[in-house]
Structure formats: C-alpha cells, structure tokens
Image 1: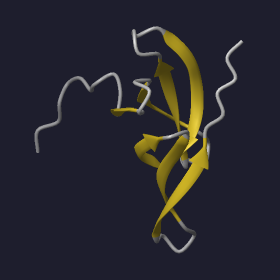
Image 2: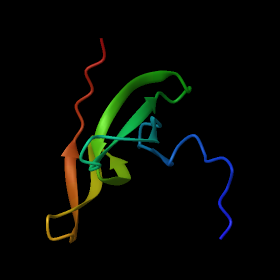
Image 3: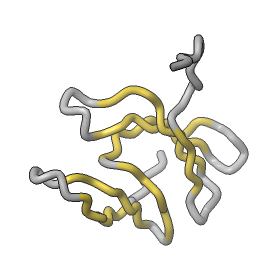
Image 4: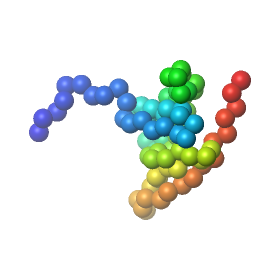
Length: 87
C-alpha cells in the first residue's frame, strides 16, 4: 500500500444556493460525530467556523442536510435549519 507523504488541507467542500462555501477540515469533536467547517462568503472572505454534524451533501434554501449514523449504525438523513445572524 502506498501512503501519501502529505494530506490535503481539507476533507471536502460544498457550496450552498447563496454561493457560500463550506470547507470541512480534518478536525472533529471529542465524540468524532461532528466536523469543524470553515465558512466563506461568495467572494472568498472568511465568515465563521462552525461545528456541523454528519456528512453534509447539500445546503439549500436555509436548510443543511446531513447524513448521520444512529446508535445501531444505520445511516439517516437529517435536516437542520440555518439561521444566519451576521453582526
């Protein structure tokens, strides 16, 4: 098996319907169920860092859809509402 010497800076990226960019980092919480995301505006300026559960395949119309596992290890799709309060 060939193991790369370096890893990418991030796990994956996803953009919402308002062109904000969500970048999943390699950092996770203590339970390893949530991932830290760096979020950028459409022009690439940093907005916020957020702890988001599960694998995020889609963000549309103010809702974040995440694939999470139950205690029995079954995958479920959950929907979260996003409320932006920018100061």
